[in-house]
Length: 263
Ligand SMILES: Nc1ncnc2c1ncn2[C@@H]1O[C@H](COP(=O)(O)OP(=O)(O)OP(=O)(O)O)[C@@H](O)[C@H]1O
Ligand SMILES: [Mg+2]
Image (cartoon, rainbow, N blue to C red):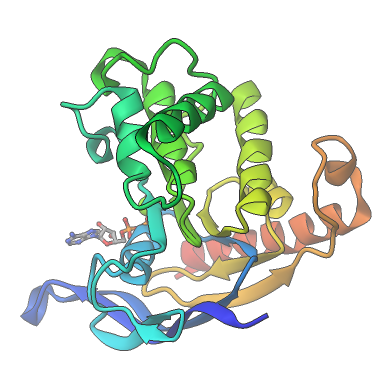
């Protein structure tokens, strides 16, 4: 499969002069069309900064990002982000339904009625039936996060970058949302890059897990998850391939923590 997204020697620093703080250093990655890739790494290592660079919202200080063979210098059409800070990413003057419809503004081949029906269907799929007419600030944090996911899914973008999209969702809903994301990604042939703190989730969702090192971050290991899609919450999590990948990622992260304690 050809690459849909590449980062080539990407570096990013915040600040300047003596206050300059390098966040990403020489990071290279390649995401193939149709893949589901998870990114895991220590807290504060630069995952959100990386997604901002990949999506064209931040310009890298070094190197380049390409989407479908074109250098990214602004947010490209066909790429959507579900932000970690969902409370600030939803438009407070729009209802939850209108927020989802906003995500569909570039979807072609559907009239307004069909879009509305589709938006309502997606809100129902994320467990928000009856809340489309509410405003984001009238629903809980976990519900707002699900509105943001619904908006990302509804966009039908070729590439979806998801920054800890399930962090505020309760454990039971979380498993349903994982399966929903996988199902939608397959149905709409969406390529997904998922940042998560949850190693089990990273492995369950992905074809590959990229482990990021401490700041200034780069990819330190690629763990291939050799398991078929679709996944199943019970059998996948018991499969030897799942346990093996989980072990490898956890051991790496533990090693990084111990390294940090020593230094
Ligand atoms: N706009 C900014 N200006 C200056 N420093 C920033 C800015 N955004 C983030 N940082 C710093 O950059 C570092 C990486 O932040 P980032 O949010 O990318 O990490 P992260 O891996 O997503 O963290 P988390 O796991 O908490 O989500 C942190 O030390 C943070 O304080
Ligand atoms: Mg982050």
